[in-house]
Image (cartoon, rainbow, N blue to C red; front, top):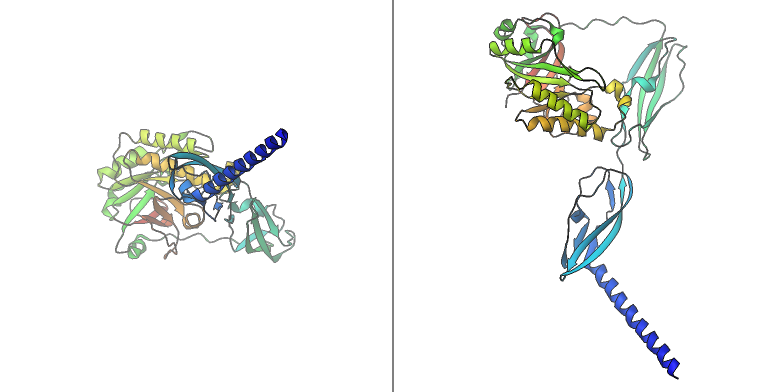
Length: 388
């Protein structure tokens, strides 16, 4: 009889414990609410509080969710309800829904028998995958003259696919390309919008410049190449004409800015280049921005980076420059500004056309690289500078 009472007591106690446990679990399940949308786009800027709301309490710590790696991630958190601390957790899925990008022209022309690889001559990349796969869909014969209708296909590791139709022309002999005619200074002035001024950008390639004639022609602004990284992984080198150009331009009352050509592969390298620029400029005063010029698109595969990392390194350079109270600007062509870059800095657009279709804001527009400017021999990059 005594054993039966003990067993009964144990059963009752177990029921009480189970009831208490059920109440605790049930109460805790009502303490907070998890967002129904637990699929998060990679690289999203999202806080814990965007996903969890505590009904009658507070999160002990709100923090930024790491969204830099695709896949399932368990999120743990702590919160207070009635001065009691509780723990919770839930799963989210980091996904990449952005298609890769390739810069594919409508037509490619090669002479019969030419040894080439279309996968190599076309720039492609992805916001997340460092080395997306690419392939040519369709049949062609480089030894047979014809026009082949093909598709350039790029796929990232998440299965996002971009396809670009193009024509491959295989011809029997090369067609001599006509030399691009210079744009005369008179025509350059006729194109000038009311809200802009003419600006040139120069480097050692222009040789000796007669800055007095440049000024007398009505040019009041110039971007001068400060220097360049010699090659991938190499050191920075000052432009051999920089000191002469900046000295004589300023002596003639021309307002100047500078640009730096980079082969940076990561944030560390970009930061070191910014330090080099700051140090090299310490004895000069400039009026216009410092431009970051990264255009290693034909070598992109060698860098083994994605678009997100490219934007990070560019932003690292520009933000460091800003800490020294310089204005900053990103130089790039329309194609890459629209499809690769995602920065919150001023834009120096390169688009060689009379009427640009670029829809973003721009501070400078390099509209030709074959301009004719008094005081300069040879072709000159000419820009519209939109005064603010």
